[in-house]
Image (cartoon, rainbow, N blue to C red; front, side, top):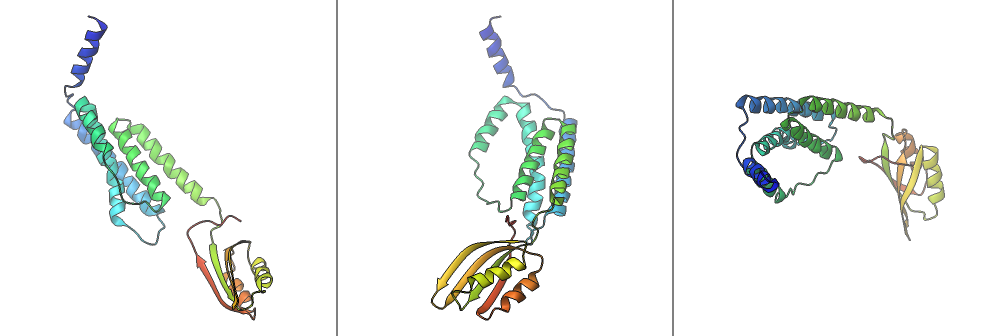
Amino acid sequence: MSFQDALKKSIFEGFTANDIPVSQIVAVLAFTFCIGLYLFLIYKLINKTSLYNRSFHIAMAMISVVTAGIILAMQSSIVISLGMVGALSIVRFRTAIKDTMDLLFLFWSIGEGIICGAGLFELAVVVALLVTAGILILELIPLNKKPYVLVVNSTDAGAEDEIVKKIADNSKGYKIKSRNLKKSGLDMIVEVATTTEKELIGSLGEIESVVNVSLLTHEGEVRI
């Protein structure tokens, strides 16, 4: 048999469906469901956003099961494999992911589905445990956990030096983000890292020209 004949034979044989035992399909999907349930619980434990999206939570966990089913289907026939490639290439996801941690969990769920669909159950468990340990360890690393945005309104355009001195005395660090100088006074926006919020606001309020002080929190970390 020539090389060309062997190649043609292998291609035509690849187009025939390879039966996967039902017991294997059930076992793979059941194990993947357990991994998805684990992701569901870890996401609930780690998620700290004030607005909780339950539908995203459930969808994120079940994506692994759907992905495992796709991988099993692609293993059964080259025709299905090519069809899946074509179908997935035209899919467009319009939902914006606002939290980077949600993006991590989505990729994690998809990756676990691919690994489980390939039958690498030990690898799936190891990846799940290592990613969980990595998230928890990095969460424990101390950072600037109380970042604030300080907004100060003053009727005196020359009061900046006094305002900055008060901020420096009552914070671990600061960075002036905006100055708005008007005839009627001065408006400043400052990023501040502090643990003495009340003292900072009180000291700024003692300045005679300051008419308003606002201290706002935000989700990012301030690097001073």
